[in-house]
Length: 103
Image (cartoon, rainbow, N blue to C red; front, side):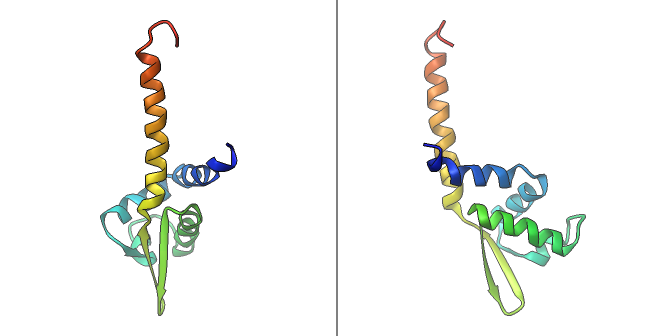
């Protein structure tokens, strides 16, 4: 059971940081290069590269390097794993709420 949650742990760990959440929000609108992601953020390009690496390790982001440009995009499959997990928890909790006195 715990091993099956390992990918989910990585996603939640990656999303625990506000900078990485901001990067994910940006990439949900459109693909972007690392330098485009770094431009509005109050940190160095090297710091953004590290954040992108963590997002990539979690499976949330995929990157492709063409020449000197690394383009980032969201991997919707990783988001689907989180959505499925949350939906299962929601069903369990709603089931408990439907049975008064058993919380």
